[in-house]
View 1 (cartoon, rainbow, N blue to C red):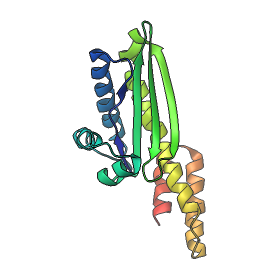
View 2: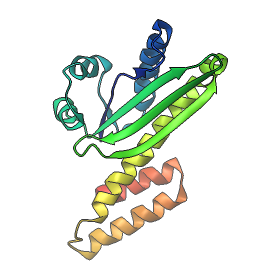
View 3: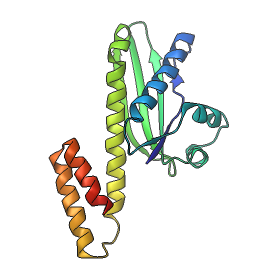
Length: 172
């Protein structure tokens, strides 16, 4: 699975929040790059293509990614809101969205937590999408079905080790 994180919109309109939006995108790219199953496009590539004005499908094709992450940053006198959306590039379908609200003074204390939550939700959602697609395929033989069942059993355990074991079964 591959993903591009688009520049976040600065809904407040201030220069400080523009820098905050750029920094948040960089932090998300760094966090998502830790997941070996995700191919994360470099920010410079995304910024260059995003200004062309393509729709989601066009951006996906141009960047050669399956998913786009869009977001916005908005600040009031006392609070900060960060909203994110995971979009399937080919269809434009929204797969996941979340809004994070926090006191503005606590931003840097929770920025890593926000990036980790987004990364975990994205990784989970993308894995679920890939698994759902594989469920729709016809099973050519019993051995393939048994591998799929074993992989699903491993996923139910919910550990990193069992997820890796499940991946081996799914690849078989």
